[in-house]
Structures are given as C-alpha cells and as structure tokens.
Image 1 (spheres, rainbow, N blue to C red):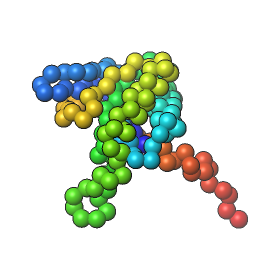
Image 2: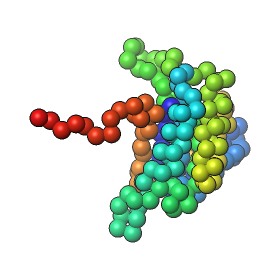
Image 3: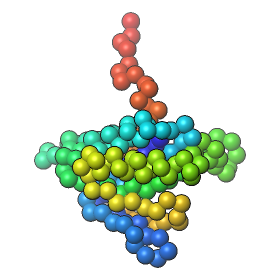
Length: 158
C-alpha cells in the first residue's frame, strides 16, 4: 500500500461539477492499493499517516502529528501510485489491486483513521475527481507499507 501525503491549508474534491468533500488544515492522503495488500498494510499506513510528525511546532520544526494538532484528513483512492514506467512510455498498472479488492481496503483504512480520532473526508472510489489542494510548505511525503519490512537503522560498518 502506498500513500502520498500532502500537508494542506485546505483541500476539496469535486465530482461532476459538485463538491463532495472538503477539509481545512490537515493532510491529503492519496492512497494506492496493490494486489498483495491486506489488513496489515492498511493498519501500517493508517498508523503512520495519523502519527507522522509533519506539522510545525512553535520553533518551526516538524514535531506535531495530525492527531497532535487536530488536523483533518482527505483520503482519495489513487491506483496510479502503482504506475510502473520502466518499460515504454505508457504506465502499466498491473501491480494495482483490482477495484473489488482495493475499495474495501480504502474503506478500512479510512475507518482506522477515524477510530484513531481523526475527522476524515473522502473522495469517491472509481470516479473522475478534481482535487484542489493548497499545499502548505510545500510538504509532501511518500509512505510505502513495504518499508515496514526494512531494518530501521543501518548496521554499523566495521
């Protein structure tokens, strides 16, 4: 599972000319689901997104999480996060989960964020959306659930 997170002053989603969701200060989370993702990956991404310390403290340092500052979240499903451009010029999306697998995991991730205490708005699954973001900073962070398998620190060299 991948999440591209942007810190925003405000953001909204429109579908067919009508605004369906909006947030004030918070995080926009573009969420991509791969064919191998499940509950564990959703939990990892939800926990990371809720606790990622990317809001400024009084000294201007990244020290506050969405939970710490009462930020809102806007979650938008985005299969294109699994676009592979290694061969040719047209992206391949073969790693992205099919809709019937992806939608329940997007819903579950949103549920986990809400269970953590966050106010979460969403886009519309499989709709053509216009997403308006006032990126604050700009701050953009990529999360990948595969990273949880990597060692947290490199071992010292001899």
